Amino acid sequence: MIKSVLIFNNHGKPRLTKFYQQIDIGIQQALVQEIYSLVSKRPDTVCNFLEGSQMLGGKDTRVIYRHYATLYFVFVVDECESELGILDLIQVFVESLDRCFENVCELDLIFHFEEVHHILSEVVMGGMVLETNISEIVSAFNEGNKQKRRGGAMSTISGSGAGAVARDLGANLANTVTNTLQNTVSATFPTFRRNSGFNS
Figure 1 (spheres, one colour):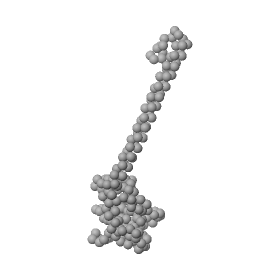
Figure 2 (cartoon, rainbow, N blue to C red; figure 1 turned 180 degrees about the horizontal axis):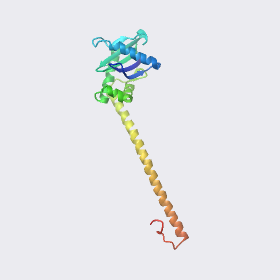
Figure 3 (cartoon, helix red, strand yellow; figure 1 turned 60 degrees about the vertical axis):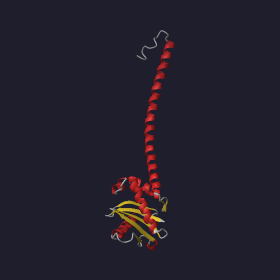
Figure 4 (cartoon, one colour; figure 1 turned 90 degrees about the horizontal axis):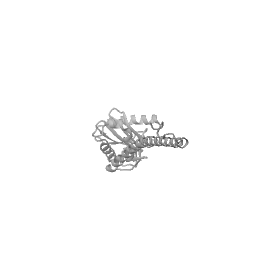
């Protein structure tokens, strides 16, 4: 099971933190700092997975990461997950981000964090892998964006439609009142000219 997904930059600033187990906020921050201290000191020539410390869960926990330019992508998993499979999953996640944001960078993760969480939820949900096909992930993300835009457009249309309906009802009501008054006056005073005073 995947316990958490973390993205942080070369200075240890978290850009995404997703924990799939209930953990106190203070402990989460301590875990992020510990993981950063573990992976940032490792040279690029060593393997990309290591055993977790006692704070992370001991020998039953693995930290699997990849370092891209200024960002570390880290998955913390239990012993049931394949290290190489998780390395491939990190690659799938990064390529999905790259396709959705067209050359993803750290600023995309900062300013579009909701979309990044959406993409992650297409890949991993509740600590379990859902999808590994990049085309399917990007397609689901694009469909979600279309639905969001369509929902915004529908609320705009319905808002303007309600205003138009209200204007039409008001105009129809005014015409009905005017015609009723003219008919009443004409019936009461037959010598009264129909157009005098009302529609002039």
